[in-house]
Image (cartoon, rainbow, N blue to C red; front, side, top):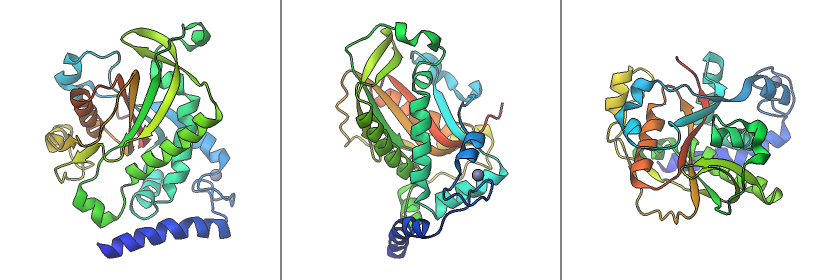
Length: 285
Ligand SMILES: [Zn+2]
């Protein structure tokens, strides 16, 4: 356990140092361009995609609980054989990768902000939406790891991503003051000021040591995940005005984990919108 912690500190400190001494080869094109993924390959391989959610796993919960939209999950990179190698590296041995990916997530989030928050609204008329003095707050949290597992692995990549994304978005917010965001709540569609971005560490807790889901079929995934999580009630949210929860995960295949977390936060916390935001994903249907 202690060894793992030391290993993590070693990785977290040494990696940036190593990067500054040797230029990195781009993961996709192998050109020596000093970045994990070079600008050209970012353009080619990274773009924000909305996950198509299989309505079979939505179950009656989301149909019964009124909200403006159906649950939304976005992802940045298509999960295929080649990138599965990259995610394994990031997840298990390279915590420092979170900084690079968080910057990308932050860039795409800001670029597509109105699309993410308003969905089907015709954004050609963005400027025409009336202004509301109700402020918008964005809370960022992550998919939780079972505590024993986290101790063994020394870090939870989704948590690192969420933390780095929060600081990257905060930087952005400080640079662009008076950022207006179009948001559709139950009150209608308005432009709002972005008031705050807050990182919620361990907002969700995994109370069941779930089996890896990738081998399981849809039904088994759902039963494996039932009662697997709870909300950490010791975190006080201080929700005022409009509040959006961004749930960050590294990988999303069917979306069943994300939907379980969304269900919990809909039951126990009063967010106006919750959005899944993941690094890797794919559309299976
Ligand atoms: Zn490249």
